[in-house]
Amino acid sequence: MQPILTLIALLSDATIGYPQWLYRNIGHPVSWIGRLISWCEGAWNAASLSFARRRFHGLIALAICLAVVLAASIAVARLVALFLPPPFDILVIGAIAGSLLAQRSLYQHVQAVAEALEQGGIEQGRRAVSLIVGRDTRALDEHGVSRAAIESLAENFSDGVVAPTFWLLLGGLPGCALYKTINTADSMIGHKSERYLAFGWAAARLDDLINLPASRLSALFLIAAAAIVRDATAKGAARAVMHDARHHRSPNAGWPEAAVAGALGLRLAGPRVYEGVSVEDRWMGDGRAEADAVAIRQALKLYRVACMLQAGLVAFLAAAAISY
Image (cartoon, rainbow, N blue to C red; front, side, top):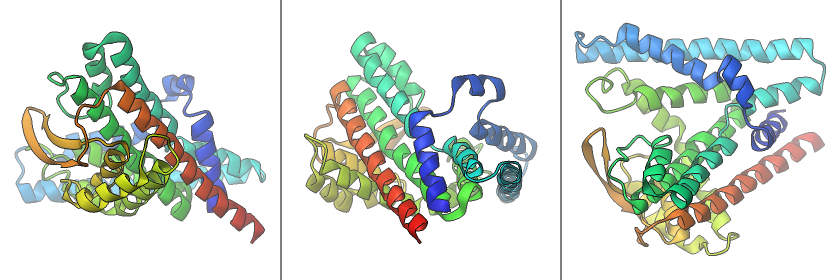
């Protein structure tokens, strides 16, 4: 059943996404999770507490968030199955699971950066990319904006598409919801700042662990996509992954970033600024650093094909499940 559910979720996200009218009226599941995490952080991350105490509080807060989300996701799946007969139950659960994927929204946000650069110039490009990256974008030139957009596309292909799909395949709706909880917690509190270093420690470490399989899978999908996409090279993608992926400051982000960099003949990552602090990251790939809107669109083509390859694999597993 899980492969069929996962295929429905992928198709739902790719074709419909999460409707804006629904978001305006009830919000989004990830925003609900975010509110819970924010409440826990505000209540238990007091600056007056010791480092060890704050780290313990962060661990407890994460456990509570996971327990709440697990109970809610199981309840939703059971209620749908109780009130709807097959196959309508799996269609509805699949659509709900599809809201936890980011295929469509990621494409739209990165495409918006390319359009902003093409139509409005560097200032609009900076504003567009600031919506999808955490670094300081005010001083970025066209190349910096373009690289930031492509890096976000690569990293979020792993975190926002491949990883939730992987955990949906393994654990159904509860597995996918638990993954999104951990990943959301990491994005909110898993920073190495004075405020979050202790409290977000558990979220950051657990996020690193659960993203290990997806980061490697995402690199494989991107290498395979590079063999199909015109003006991309699978050999370059594989070489960059083998040479550079492990040297990224993140144990996971380097894999898809290196794959995209090598596939398109770019250099990604490298030195950048977060909240006024300069981070000396190693470059991924040995190509050109002069990216532009054209390079963003090339990366989007690679991303689209990689998403289709993932969907094809899930469809194969679904067909095998049906025949079995």
